[in-house]
Image 1 (tube, one colour):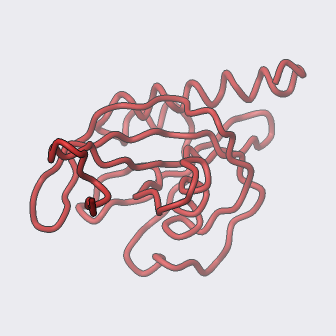
Image 2 (spheres, one colour):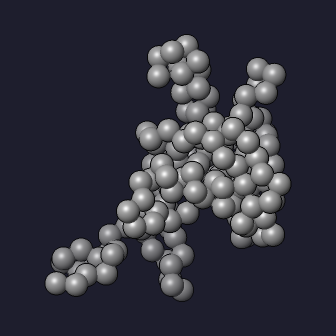
Length: 155
């Protein structure tokens, strides 16, 4: 039986899955986060669809490069996953977005989506003022906690 990728055997549509990165860097003892603009001008983390055969963390890493021009280490354990409404083929669909911490190693001057996006490094307080979704703030706080545990050697 040939099924579309997003349908179950019962014909119900499965939620679309997306992965995103929470890019951060530590500068002079301060954690900074990288936000990008969405197509509607909102400040968000880089995120997008998961390609067939791709792990979620790999998708987060790919999206971070494509949309923000950053490369770094993405951890395999999501900080947060939550339900979202996504645009797909002219209609809205239920989906799930999982955000993964990404310690940025370097930032490129040129990247695939640079023409349609702005990027901005911010502190946690600035992030909280710029984003319109509290779950992004929660993910950023989780990145800080995880970063501190890793520095102490607790993984």
